[in-house]
Length: 263
Image 1 (cartoon, rainbow, N blue to C red):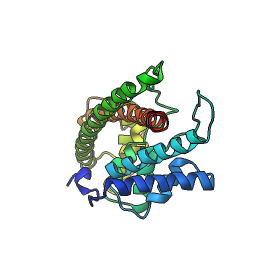
Image 2 (cartoon, helix red, strand yellow):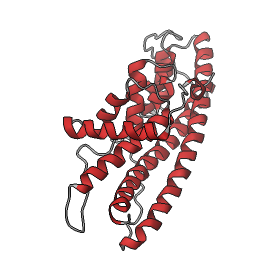
Image 3 (cartoon, rainbow, N blue to C red):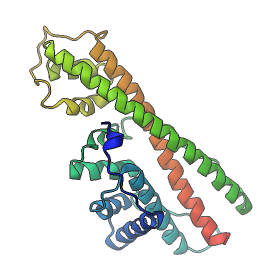
């Protein structure tokens, strides 16, 4: 059974997800912790799946922006959130790591490549020049968000499949005498930043071994090619996920503005 099938799938009303988001935003505001940490603490006992967690994080950011915006005065109010908006991938990673859920292996991969190491172009649409243009701007953002959610879902599935293929190739290489250290060295020549994420899936399956100069896995070996394909999809997913988070924060800002000025 795939990770996507293994995640918990209880039905949760949208109103409850919104309430959880508001609770997390209040916790951040009253305790001084970041929105991300507040979302993790709020969601730890809830047992939600990845999509439900993302919805709660979205509501957390909306509630935080609304509260901050209402506390400002003047026409050109710029909302600044200390610590930045809550990050759904970090929240998912923390929640699955803390519960050791079966789905943790893929969720952890979502945050395997940190922003300091893998730079991506931010999705920053041109701001509306007039207040009356903002509803149309919000509509465009919502359409972009839907497209990015679909893109992430497809890439998540592909990443799961590539990871399964990689693990099968690695286990065969292990049966042929390769150690986990041999694999890590071969993979690091392709993409060093994802090596730890890949080898963590094989702990206990393949002997760790020691570095030996006389042993070297060929760059053309199937296990290296499988890692190369996995790396490509993982990086595509990271780009899409970064863009989705950017759009979600922009949507929170637009929603706050519309509720305040257009109601």
